Amino acid sequence: MVAQIPTETTTQVIYPDCDGNPMSDHTKQFRWIVTIKENLELLFAEDPQVFIAGDLLWYPVEGNNKIRLAPDAMVVFGRPKGDRGSYRQWVEDDIPPQVVFEILSPGNRMAEMSRKLNFYDRYGVSEYYIYDPDRIDLAGWVRHGDRLESIEDAHNWISPRLGIRFSMQEDTLVIYRPDDRPFLSFIEIDQLRQQAQQETQQAQQETQQAQQETQQARQETQQARQETQQVQQQAEKLAAKLRELGIDPNDL
Image (cartoon, rainbow, N blue to C red; front, side, top):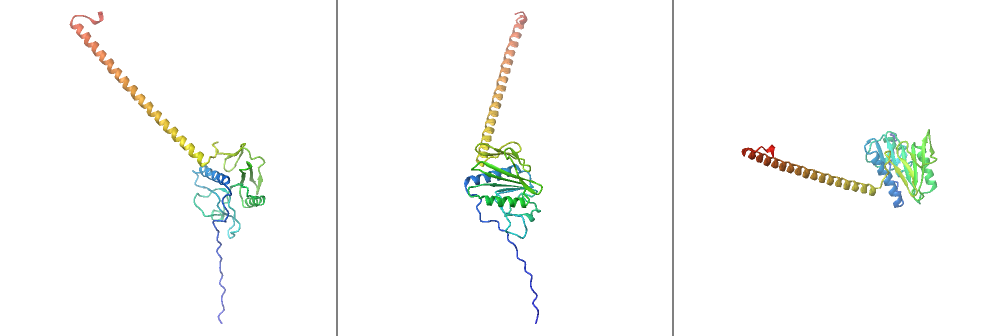
């Protein structure tokens, strides 16, 4: 009898790109997610080594597809821009997202938010921010040593990694870039773009008008010179005629 040699099989772990949960529960939450994510994209557009994503599944542990979370927005310094189906940390030089954002909706529960805080704390997030657009409330945590610690007062807090400033207004949160320009929605950005285009067109029209007025002034000056020359020529002819008649023009 020939002995059967057991064959070692390796099960390939699949890391799904979707966890089946919606990106947002309502329009206000979605609007804030998009505004934060896209303004961060603009802020770091010139840095090829800053990866920013929204609602992307993050797998921190190789071989375990159950340990995962999809932050509403996340920023990873030291990883290149580009499309990804998920953020598998071991493929990304083992660099975890340094900054994450969560936008609350009425469907969020304290137990869920506590679980997320523990997750981000355990897997190396440096800064974690939660904004509740209904209550106009911002909470944040920043890493000290090996723990995320709560920020006592988030008003006018400046993110150590992003350089952005959070300002709690009476009716909303305003986030300012390091150059003190506020984060804007797509509509506001488009309005500013249209305004800039209109101002540019107006400036071009004013420049064109000024050029035309300058050209007209030059023509008028040239015409005046020509008229002066004609008068001088006529005066010289008259003086010459007087001299022919024996009259000195200077005696007149």
